[in-house]
Image (cartoon, rainbow, N blue to C red; front, side, top):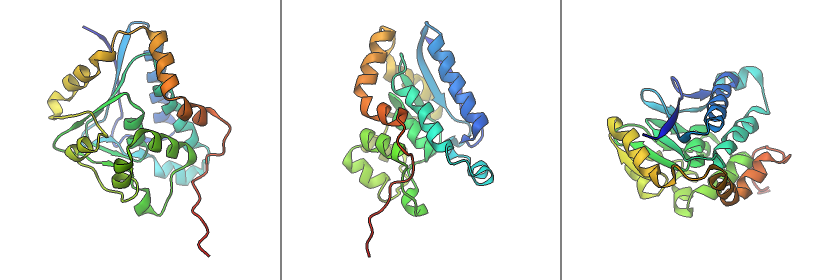
Length: 221
């Protein structure tokens, strides 16, 4: 049996400093375990992750937190093992970003949406989020998810190649492990280096000092 590390996003899976720290610690623990062959990410109940904790953001006015979240996600992009998102329910905003930062994603067939809702919230993506989305999604998937805000069902996400497979909840982990099997057990240093090379433009931008403000629309006046 492979050595599996798991992390569950509890409740609605919303990110604040505490929950982000727990996620970061889970990544660190998996990397520190030389026997780890795969990291499985999952949610609880009807959710995978609903993204940022808006109550925390409004109360704290923490303008650096979104950038910090993306720096944690960047660790998935060159982790020395496959990262699999078991999309057990809704993946919105930053939750959708986690799906995109994973090596493989499989989605529950009967519940949950993959959604980038910014267009319906009168928002744009931040610089780092934009790089991840545009690097990981096809033009057709970007049109459907980002530019229209469509809530993608599992079958629609599979059609657009946002996820790699679809299964009932009780079969999701088995499918995730089977999907990731070709990447499991590879030399850790080689795999991490190859993943970093493949994801280098995203990682370098996320790790840079680039301002992480939202993409600004052109002036129509």
